[in-house]
Image 1 (tube, rainbow, N blue to C red):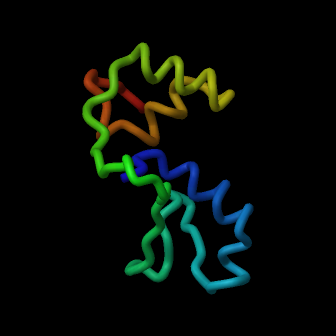
Image 2 (image 1 turned 180 degrees about the horizontal axis):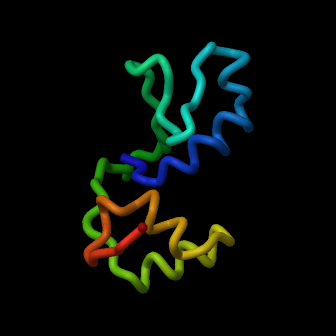
Length: 89
């Protein structure tokens, strides 16, 4: 599972998803129609499924730096995966 739904915007632009499938993104980056799904699949004989566990603040800071976005933006989108509390108000 890819918990960072902001990557949907990148993939939709890259693949011209709306034009090719009719699927659109909401403001919260959910897909419409609601039964639409997306996934990143990497073909490798040693590949395996895994889930993202809780993310620590140092990981959020590093991820924000690599995406060139503010830490608060990452915390907004990954709040359910954080190992610490954030107040986004």
